[in-house]
Image 1 (cartoon, rainbow, N blue to C red):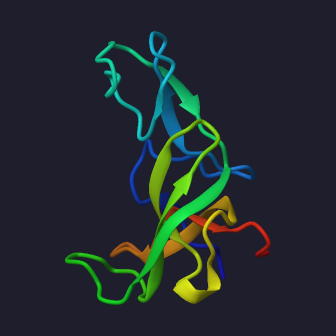
Image 2 (cartoon, rainbow, N blue to C red):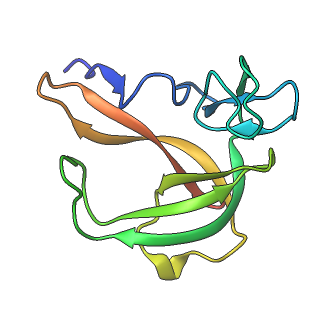
Length: 137
């Protein structure tokens, strides 16, 4: 049986390769990083920040479990949702691969992963980014 085509939940948020990365920007004036990419720095309003790939690891800052599907959501529930602080100094709100809040701790090392979200009407696997505990395989 042939493999299903894989599509991103939204283009321009992340790379889908062996070493995935979030796609952000860095301001050339104030030096701040931000995610997702913007045409203007949200901190100092400088135009044309430099596109950059952000770190694929960070630390868990806050988390919870989502137990009811948001409107339009087609993936499985429950799932984890958290805030991961990246070495670039920004905090990213992201899906977590761990849906049990008691299995996570503040400051825990996290790694970026590309995970299945759902199958679309054309039978394609829709993938998104999520952070997993660094010790998870």
